[in-house]
Image (cartoon, helix red, strand yellow):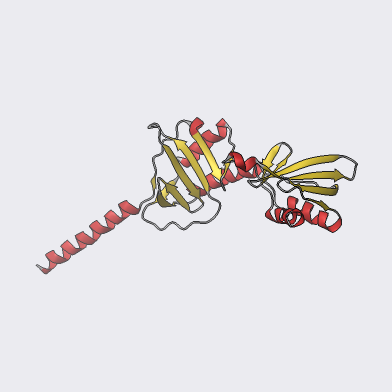
Length: 231
């Protein structure tokens, strides 16, 4: 009788281990990403532009993500949100970090580097879009506040502070979510040392119009401008 109970207990333990192993084993998440025309990728609220070939590559990488169910998924690194329309015409989202994947509001811990392959791929594309705002050849910059008409002139050390701040952090393209976002707040009239001039504008978003595209603007540069013409 004692041996029978012991055998039954061992059988129960083995069964529990088998069930746990089945529940915790890495598994693929089935995704319907066949139509890449309905995919958009967002980082920090800004959409990242991908070619059709890049979208196809991304689909292959995303569909190979393997996750560990029932494990706590801490968050770190840059967050990419992949939005897509499934065959039932629903808009779905996949949120991917190096060590966390959220699909339909369910979070998982990725197995191995399956998620970081996605973030590495998107990091490369994102970094390719970065632009350095280079106006260090400026002789002076006159800033006009469009709302109150106040002006301020940056010269000498103040000019260097502003041009250094604008160039300090490479800027990324900005996506407007509202028509108001593109309303002009400040106009920068730049006089260069070679006698040429250029006009840039900073919009509400905030973003700066530089070389025909709207880019993120360094917050310290924005503070310098506000100190000069808002007070």
